[in-house]
Image (tube, rainbow, N blue to C red):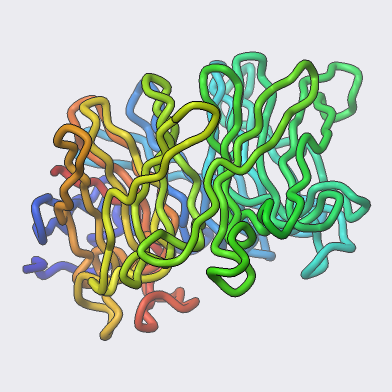
Length: 431
């Protein structure tokens, strides 16, 4: 049962007023977004630094008139966390609507993307960009810079998901449109001291459409050999689903180029269909883990791809069945002990008949996995719509994530589950 509390107490810096246990874990709301000038809609999870501070992006809000989104920080203050806005986007050439979380390099700089803004001329009027926040050399705060603005000239455009970095400082990501056939693309930004932004961009893979897949909806994974892995929502098996059931693809470095191949094309049920979240790679085994929005009995699957000869063998680890766990299953977090953690956008009660969402664990036992419910967001006050949250695990096993809607501030109402209001939360879950 949720303790009685006021909205002002819940959003106060360092407040941990809202705690609840529903399922096998205890949740604490670390911060509710939506105060004046604050961000709103933290859709993509958080990352942490060595001090325990949490960083992420919001899709909306900020101090600028455009309310085009923010980069935020939650700083531990003893009893809780204090939130600060590190950067507010202005829209237009400055970018609008961060469409993924943050990647952090060894110097403490952050990298991300915005879906729109930047150059005009693409679908919905803008092509998106890649940005960087660099810590100031003296004093506190960060300097924001635009590393690249995409264009509608055969270039990649409208980036989605969190960028990934390699050991050389190259930045990689996926776009839902652009490329040779406008079916989506993978791009690479290479550090270049001669370039005005400090980076040069090139498209290293154009999604071919059809059996090769099209319309990526998330970012990439990268393994220790520099191979990249991604998904497309459509394409692949065109006979099993209208427009295709989606694919998982792999790009292998070959000199300065990349060779792409489909490592799994989803098919008819009981297989999964329409992957929309970034995959996770186990560098020890080479296995690839992910989720699908549909397929299985109805509401999607968690799957595993195991290297086998020159290809991969797929196994459905969990069928979400008709739990009501529909729409936007998150990326899977692979824990050191081998279990997998994820979230679903709906289910779990509250938020009308749709449910506010839930967090689950897939417990490994040999080569099999069993499902365990960790948390139902059974009230929008606890958070709602953990849409695409990438969960983070601390050394003590606690999970951190975000919900796009819900929380104490109800001034936001952009279509959360069951029409739930709320500007979103950062939460902590102790399994």
